[in-house]
Image 1: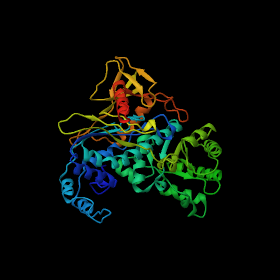
Image 2: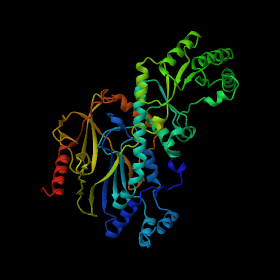
Image 3: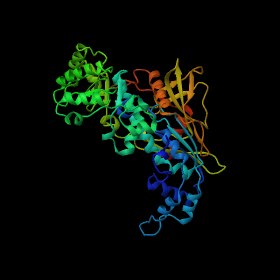
Length: 488
C-alpha cells in the first residue's frame, strides 16, 4: 500500500518553510544545482536501549517517487508574503520548482535492519536544493516509525515469545500516527493489530472481540456472553472484569461449555484491570479445572516491556499481551531525535568538499563524507559496524575508532565476514529494486534481532554495540574540526 493510496499526492509541501526558503536562497546564490550529500541518522538509541529497528523507508520511497510541485502547490507558494508584504518567492523560482523532476540518488538501510547511533539510515545525493527540501518529510516518516518498531521489539522481547497484539488506535496521535504506529509495531514484532484500516492497507492481521459496553448492554454478564457466543461462536474471547473478575471467568466457563456442545471452542478470556498477576493465576486454575486448558488468558491495561517483565516475574499466566497506549505513543520517549546533516558538496565538475558541523557537545559534531556502513559478522553474529567514506576507501585490515570516544579502537582481521548496509533506493530519481511487503520487512527484523548478541538486547542494562569510524574518516573529521576551529 502506497502513500498515494492514503493521501493526496504528491506530498511535496509536507515540509518546513525553511527548507523552501533555503532552496530559494540556493537558487538566488547560483548553487542550487551543486551536488550535495546528506545523511539521516540518530545519535542515541531510544528507551535507553542497546539497538533500534530502522523503519519508515517504504513511506520515504513512496514520497520521493511522487515528488513534484503541482499547480495548486505553486499557487499557494506564490501567495506567501514576507514582512514587507511583498511575495516571499520570485515567480521565476516558482517556475523552476514547477519544471523540476526529482534527480537524486538515494540509498537506505533495508527496512527492519538493526541500526545504531550515528549510522546513516538514508543517504541522499543530488542537486543541493532537492536534497535539502526532502529533509523534513523523511525525518517525519523515519523518526516515528523507527521509534515505534523499536518499542515493539522491546515489548515482544519482554513477552518472551508469547503473542503481543497492538491495541493503541484510540490513544494514538491522530490518524496517521495510528496507521504508522500499527505498521511499525507489526514490523517490530507484534503479531496483530486492532486497527482495521491498518489491516486493510498493510495486510496486517487484525484481532479483537468486545468491550465493557457490550456486557453492560445486557441484564446479566452471563447473558452478554451467551449473546456474543451466539453472534460470533468462532471469535469468543470474553472480557471478564466488568463486575467481579473471577465470577466473570466462571460465567465464561459456563458459556464455553455450551459453546463446546455446539461444536465450537472458547478462545479465552481477557483481563483489563486489577491485579493482573493474581487474577491470571486464579483464572488459569478455574479454566483448567473446568476442562479448558487451551483457553488463553489475554491481558491489557497500560502494558509495556517493564510491566510485562514484572508480571512474568510474579508468575502471571498470561499468554497474550494487548499493548496499546504505551506502545503507539512511545509513552516513555515520544521522539527519536533523528537528524539530517550535510556531509559533502561540490560544484558541477569540481572536487568534493567535505563538510562538518561543530558543537560544544561532542555527540553533536557531525561526520563528513559520502558514508556507507559496513557490518562485520562472525558465524552470522554482528560484532561491530564501521562507518566509512566511499571516496577514501577502506584498508585491508581496517581500524575502527569509536564515534564518541577516540581512545576506543578496534582492529578488524582481513578475513572477517562483512556486508555493506546501505542499498540503492533511487538512482537519478528513478526507483530501483522491488518494494517489499510488510510481512517480509517484519521477517527481516525478527532475523536481525535473533542474530544479535543477547546482551545488546537486554532491556535494562544493554551492552553497547561497537560502532566506529574507519580510521581515515576519523582523521579527516579531526582535521576538519581543527580547521573549523582555526587550529590548523
